[in-house]
Image (tube, rainbow, N blue to C red; front, side, top):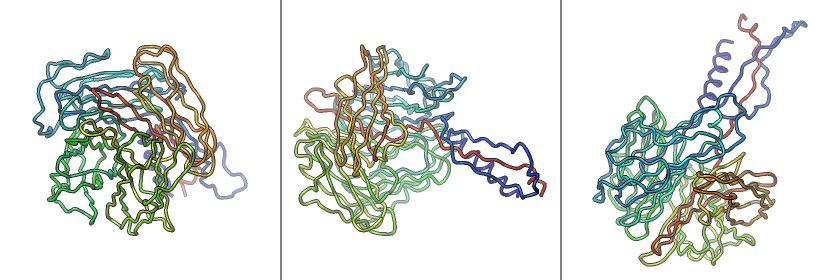
Length: 521
């Protein structure tokens, strides 16, 4: 019985580490009938998280980059007496990028919170803090040596706490809008759509939030399988610090389409992959949803000039996939790209051509007679010639309880909502007050089965500054979502796309009743 009791306490500790609450209760009385007392497990309850983390990689080494950070917690989360805190602190740097564009840079002219120009912030310096739920907080910097950030939120500010990092790089390799939702620490990340080709620089940023070192393996997979390189094995990330690694340094030959797997041997990290192309701009490549037999990639803009699909099969079986495009009026099969065969342990890539036909939509991958898991991403290009810009759309899990994305701009943000099944979905979208004032607004949308609904989120009344958007499924079948932020500049259609995954506002916690009298048996 001691082993059972210890396991119960171990499970409780594990749930607490994820930010949830687990409660052990003893029964109020013994079984007077003499029957054996038992451990009774009730159905899991969903409770607000007590602590959240967000890790933001170093934004850029360019001296013509401007970065905005936006932190937000939805209102009405935890009914907690503890007000809570939410703060982003600078991490220790390690092995800064070798970039010829690095120079001292000017501070940002925007926002109320601004990093100074005296030098990089020492590790542990506060960069941004959130004071209350329902209202975004912002900070800006124009420094080329801006550090990675390690953030945590607790109490009433923890449920759904979300941080967005948006960087505009005006010129040079990777010119464009680089945006990402700062990640929670984990032990495994999949990045299909990476590259070690000439003319492109891909850096994976590894950030360790903990007080002990993390050890990480970086595995690259091309069209012929694993790209062997000892350089990616056993990468040490010191405590509360960040390490950038150039992917081309892990491969002997340049390869256009590769899949990167970040796997922690010990500890946990946040992983972000930043791409920079000499001709097509750049962006952050978000991690794909966990391997699954089906994949949904929402939010291809209607004016995309190029759409490239990259898929990897991590299991022991080959994957055969049906390829479909869900537009505003229904689902079609792209001519010439009806199916895709992906060999086990290998990366497959295909150009989808003019798949959108001028209409925004989403790509649906479904298993064709099998169940081999895959990870997938799209590389989407807008513009032509020297005015091209690139963003990425990974496979996205379906909306669970709620998803949140920060740093939305009036007339600059677009939501893509797709219902991939045979059942319609009803979705509520809430826009917060602005970071500098205004009133929240909300609207409910119906997404027809097999279609993608593309909408501007409701505009907050009198909003000033950026605002956050929260998406909740009200009823119906599965729905997946993404947000596109477009900030055109000098004729370049700068844009970035963020998947809307669950914002980790709550956690399932089993209620356990333990008969303490059994400890004496």
